Amino acid sequence: MNDDNWSNLHIKYSEKDWSKQPSIFAEQALDYFPKQGTLLELGTGVGQDGIYYAEKGYQVTATDLFVDTIKKTIEEKQIPNIMTQAVDLRKALPFEDSSFDIIYAHLSLHYFDLETTQQIFDEVYRVLKSKGVFAFFTNSTSDPEYGTGAQIESDYFLIDNVAKRYFSVDTVKPLLQRSTITLLDNKGETYKDRKVGVRNLIRAITTKP
Image 1 (cartoon, one colour):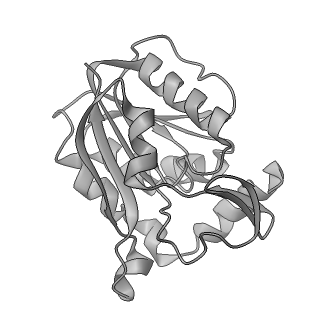
Image 2 (cartoon, rainbow, N blue to C red):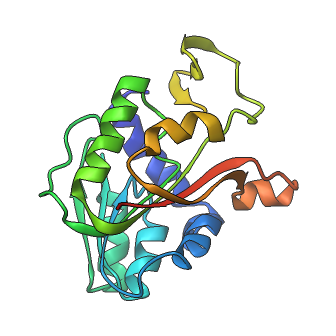
């Protein structure tokens, strides 16, 4: 997908009912977080999860390739403890080592080839504090789309001009070797999935030693 299309996609998503409430995973992950601290969100999209955490009292840095949509929402709601920053996950994260207590990513880490994916995880653990929590939610190999489109590499396909990676519990584990796994399964769901009784997305919550 062309980078400019992401901005248009955010506008489209902002019109959906689910964009006005935190995701199911955001609410689930909260139980594993420290009671307060700094939180970096990777791929905030329309921003409902970052805003949810800010309203819970965390100091949130919400990042995405384009942040215009969430900026508008923050201004309208006058939320004080959240800032936005444009970040391209294909590049090094523009933050100091050990900067955040929590790093959170909802459906934003499955668009990259394996080399880039590994680099992203390396950067996450670089900027995460010791004893910090990393929570992420991704596509699963159980998705009906898996295996369709043109295969780019193992578990990575070009589908409708969008490159998507699909994870399993086994393929996630090698990316988490430097952390303690608290939760890792393929029982995640979105509101859209819940309507049809589907629970097969990857949920992962880890702690950096």
